[in-house]
Amino acid sequence: MRRSDIIFTAALVPVDYIAVVGAASAAYFLRYAEFFQRVRPVVFNLPFRQYFPLVLVIAAVWIVIFAFSGLYAMRERKLSNDIARVALSCSTGTLAVVLVFFFSRELFSSRFMILASWGLAVMFVLVGRFLMRMCKRAYWKRGKGLHEVAVVGGDATARALLSSRFGSLSSGHRIVQQLPRWDEAGERALRAYVDTGRDLDELVLTDPNISRERMKSLVDFCTAHQVGFKYTAELLGGQSSNIGVDLIGGIPIVEVRATRLDGWGKVLKRLFDMCVASVGLLLLAPITVVVGAAIVLDSRGSVFVGLERIGTRRRRFILYKYRSMVAGAHEMKGELVAQNERNDGPLFKMKDDPRITRVGRFLRRSSIDEFPQLWNVLKGDMSLVGPRPHEPQEVSRYETLQKRLLTIRPGITGMAQVSGRTDLTFAEESRIDMLYVEQWSLLLDVIIMLKTPFILIKDRGM
Image 1: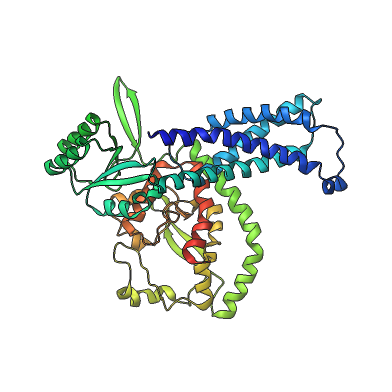
Image 2: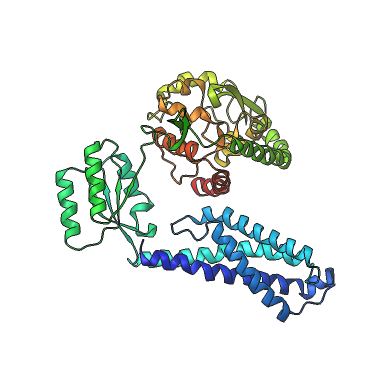
């Protein structure tokens, strides 16, 4: 790990501390502001010189909570991944403050100051971390503190990796060597590079067809030259990363699980889905009236449409949408198959589909047509987050390992939708969704849901 990585991570501690202290101080002056006192006069007398030392102690306790939440882990994370952790950590710290004040009434009991401190702390900490991230990006763009990386592989994964943000300085990496394969020529080239004394921090392998002998040679090379070794998992050709071992009769039995989403995880995800879907349906009820009127005035047919889809364990269900096509659109699909613009998999896609109505184009562009799927979530056919559901004839054309996507409930949004790329092939989309299936967590669901509206605005120019 580069020294700059350690310095920037360590610097987050005082930045977070100042942010928490600043939030609590801002809440104090906000409560004592004249316009607030006119609405609700202060019923306790707490001078700032007594309040501030208490804030300094509480802020130190919050930093400990932040540390236990993994906010100071020595690895690069997206700011979006910190949002849920920061909110949860600040909520835990606020709960601790409430408990202390409950048993120590002689301090003060301003609910406004406690709640305001919580909200401002989340905001201030995230702003502080955003500014630190900008400083780090500026440092990288000056060519300093970068991880020198060699990429081994010449396949589509290697090309996608090099054309992504990973191949730019803003990611903190600099590609110094690219080898099409790890053979004797490649090994000599890389050995010659490191023997000149130039830095090489990491080696990333993307070649899924490398032999066991060549893999051993590559790992031995990295070990001998103190180079970090990483590889891109060929998820559709590999095994699940969720492995459990049990002893039965003294014999170790290895179980390869398709997903982490099991047991209490499945219960928590279902409860989360039901709560959010229920609230969402209530809030969107007025929109249904407006959208329904627009659909009926624009073309003949019903407001809603039910489409047959395949869900978890190959169960068929009816997916609900606001109607965006003319009546009988499904029967017309056979006539348009020859114009399918997506030949990389079983899905049908046509940019200027003549079946789509004028209102339907807006509904699709804004993704409003997906809102009724909250009813599917409430029924249990779907989840808020998961692989997108496909038609029976499309699922029948899945490759064998792609059928693992049917392990969990399909979702309204998913990891592939927020990946930052709009030109994903079906194989790439499947790989990303497979990663979600294997690595599910409730925090990951929250992050994907928070990123979804921003991706829609960015990709569709809204």
